[in-house]
Length: 256
Image (spheres, rainbow, N blue to C red):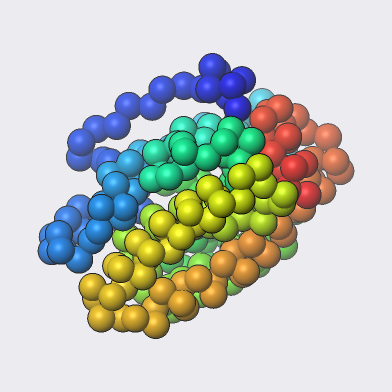
């Protein structure tokens, strides 16, 4: 984590683009419908990243893989910085912080992909300038990942996920990762409980008491989707021998 802290870039946020999981209309909702934890998560949600289109090869499928993996690596760096702003995360030991990140990073990133893809038909929207349809995914070798993420997207679309739910689910996915063993179980439990209580309070304010349970029940599907995505990328890396950033490869190996 120290290596990441020293090497990552500092990303500036403009006041008008602090949210990536929703548009400005979310601010029109009454403040009473949000609690402090969720308000903080909304305000600290990182600005969106654009894909850097790879031009090192004429192979279109390889170019897609290189572009996607570069984007995931940069998003991972941002995620590590963002995690420290989740209420309670910085109170954990460094060992537990790293364990949760290693276990739940892909889940957290895929919440964003699924959210962005809800209104995109059959495309997966990894970034504003990186939308992959089924045909392109199959040609690239990403068919299994495509199928899994589309299923997750359909689940969230059917639930009509709100921006508040999306950012909270992203944090909960990181907190509820299957990291085991942990250094300080009581601290991790308090961290998890704080996020669960924030979600329950938010849903209670909307008089949708059962909705929090439905959202938490989507976590196993999210985890399965993350596992299939990591397995797909690692398989392609080994088959095609394309380069990966060291951090991304280490984090995928830790999840495999």
